[in-house]
Amino acid sequence: MSNARPPTRPVRAPSVVKRVASVWVRHWRVYSDTFVANATPAVLEPVFFLLAVGLGVGRFVDTEFAGLDFASFMAPGVLAMTCVYTASFEATYGTWVRLRFQQTYEAMRATPLTVRDIFAGELLWCATKGALFGTIVGLVLLAFGKIVSPYALLIPVFGFVTAMAFGGLALTVTSLVKNMNHFQFYFTIGLTPLVFFSGLMFPVNTLPDALQGLAYALPMFHVIESFRLIISGTNHVTVSWAWACPIVLVVLASFFGWLGVHRMSGRMLK
Amino acid sequence: MTVIDLKNVTRKFGDLTAVRSVSLSMEKGICYALLGPNGAGKTTLSKMIGGVLPRHEGEMRVLGMDPWKMQSEVKAHLGVVMQSDALDDELNVLENLRIYGLFFWLKGRAFRERVAELLEFVSLTGREKMPTQALSGGMKRRLLIARALLSDPEILLLDEPTTGLDPQVRQVIWTTLRKLMEKGMTILLTTHYMEEASQLADRVGILDQGQLITEGSPTELIHRTLPSCVLEFDERESPGDAAVPDGSLVEHHGDRVYVFDDDETALRNWLGEHGISAPHLRQTSLEDVFLKLTGRGLHE
Image (tube, rainbow over the protein chains, first blue to last red):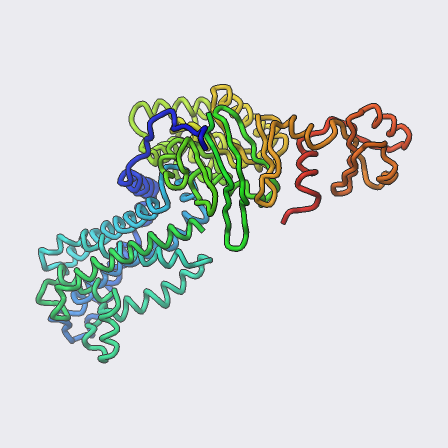
């Protein structure tokens, strides 16, 4: 050991902020080439959804939910779903492709980036996509006349936080699977019921008591109610404590964000 | 100056010990080849030196730093060419280099000039706008070498740099590496091609089942391990191990018999006496050393 001398040049590793940012830039650069193809379904799906509900089934539903017609009631949930699914796909299939097929992380690990830098960048990228697609769908909702509150200007922020929570959760799932097909379980058994029984199509307070409690305990309700708060306004929320939902959302994003980065980093070092 | 210094380094994967108490040191400006059969632990060792994997036991210093605890700093001074062609296929040659440079936070005019210089060095000038998926295997390798050199590294780590390439391309890669060595680049190379090690390496270490079983210059290793000449022939023609000249050493690998002796004339005379039809009399090579030390049969 005694012969080893310090390097001939000064140490010049980039700071952690620059390292994480470089991962984000890489994803942005690779992604921007295929932006139209990627963004099209994310934007068109909610459009079709709102059309089908507004022109179709909505006309047969007389009941008002939270003081709103059916289509208006669903609008915040549709936006929430976009952010949730955008982040979930990115951090499952997207991450898997980079991990197994493109060897992207392998290349990154040969540079000053640590595994934590790589997945922190990944998480930020998920959150960015959530903010971006959320904003685009927000504009669609605006065109449909579904946005009534000026707080809707916060959509990018809420989209970012939502996508961070669900991106972190998806990274945690990715850290566990051995095979890409296992993601099907997460989407079908995990996300789908979460989306549909958390106040997207009907208010949770119309569910039987036991199920209500469950819905309130799960993350999705808080996402949808948060968007309800800033899109439809405080008069059209479904619970009196709706103001607490964005706080829950921030807690979820912090926890799952940390967990996802921690778990994926651990997987890489095995 | 010692740039890489390992003492009793061990790394496990579950129950498997991939690298077992390896000690080695490497001086600046040399090319060191780590040889070993598949699964011997070459890549794992190279990844620990490169700050990609932590070790379980032992001491490591790369450029005077602990390569795991100071991985970002260590990796800022390393250039790595990995086994897989880990390029961004959607992006073109130039963009691949730019994005990779960003991981070192390299940008601006000096960096763009360096990129142009390196593309010229690996003969890819004019292909800047080509998507990397359109490149041939040889071009991809050269691009990976250029990419590894972007940060002007102190040490180049090459993990099986010519595996899967045809002989012409392999020669081109070797020429490129020799040019770097002339400029004083320190290279750590893992390979299972003996010829690659003989062509490039100043020093060779042979890894087998996670252990460094021998180390030295290629000629040193040959002299230390085996007599200088070898007669190689088909097992079906063998007159039996007992019939070889006095003092010769017999080895069997697959269906070939190898008779080693320092006395070439003795081997030639013996050959005349036994009328073997397609013998091959030659100098002992690194490959013979490798087969002798890592044993016959497959390591799987």
